Image (cartoon, rainbow, N blue to C red; front, side, top):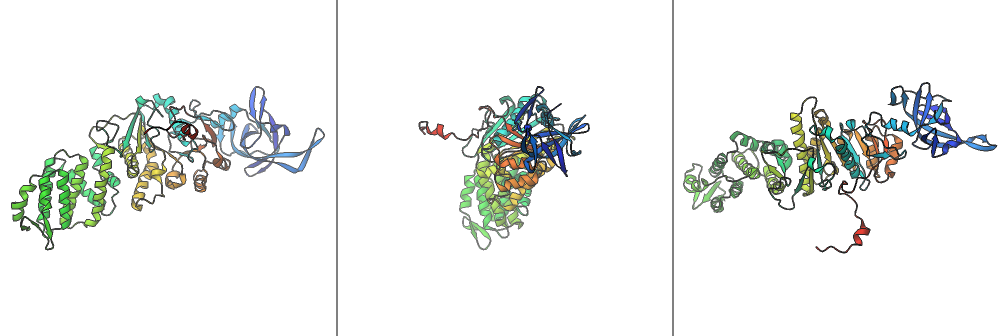
Length: 596
């Protein structure tokens, strides 16, 4: 038994009109020990049709002034409600979707809270709760197995509570399900603002935090100051092209020749030194020596730390006859003058104590020496790449380490880039995503026996299509890499969670591949248009609530949920909250100044 509130008086397609009894306008009712919500917008009604209960959500109400009824001798207008069917209950429980429609004079009843909870908690874990439904104030468990087996989007303007939602989602996962997921899944947080470097998300024993910084040099013994890459991953064309933004037609083939040369002749320091000596002789004894090669040889000598060769090169002059001049004589192609005057000095070149970054500078300069002498390339086409490599390496040394010894990965890895410059913030997330994607894709079984989850907070920093500070080719390459991961990663057990203030700035391809959404307050028309046209599971009523949502409140929808829900996410304890709280000016300004 339940409380009858009215009956169906019209059915227009999927829109149902009900005549409602006057007394049902109360906000809360109690009947037979059960609590019921009265008839109002976004509440739920049950319409009996045979042995099934058709569940409808109320979308509007009005008074029919053309019809009146006498109640207790008083004339009242007829109250009507517009509702939309969303599913039905039968012997198997709740099923979402319109299969049955009511007919005229079918009775409508209020629904007890427990039955409402069963609509949203169908196939869910009652223990996995991050908050309660806003209007019904019912704590609903989320279907965590289906939720984390998908790509997730968390959107909302600054201050709307999206960081708390992101942190709450994974904090509850690690608190409640750690024994189930340990050893089977790994989680990586790309943290642009340093919000998760403390006690957030997971216990310290299950967490590794890399505090990357390009602002100051870090202790080389601190294993969390730089992210480790294996040498074979660093000396790989895709990685090199990514780090140094190589153009496709000229610079990528050049880098490929550099890498192929290293693979062919190995990393033996003596072999590299002999290669340098051979290229010096080739440059000096070329049929038509090129002035650009002189600067390249100086760079090589400087990187190898040989002052004698540098002093010698400082005394070399290039003449328009295509010859180098040194110590009173021209260096002819026959090599006689070279062997007599220059070779004894060049033979002192040696490779000692050079790391992979120094070796890279050596190899690209030596490869360009070889290509220029052979006439393969134009110097002005490759020179920008050399300058990018030399300028980027100063920052890359501070945030990356190239080592055969790779650390044991824990359940959660947080990579904080708060103290990195903008150039590194653009490149590193792509490198990290590619690092985890390729290593996971090549080792996982089919079907996947383990998963990896990439969490990108403030995702508009790297997934934006609006950036005007980078070349179009590089921007296309950056987006293509992430689009491949989000389109193909699911079959390999790799999933992405992105959180952003501006979903409209993110590539539409990426947004369209997300499966589940937590949408906080959005007020920009472009953001709302994207949400409205991308998320097929979002109904018009829930969409209309988005611009007016309060802090911490969000619309939850997607393939893991039967119906859209409006949830007030619980606030995390202060020690578990991400470091993104607004400054309290009243408290700040009442404190004495801090000496600096």
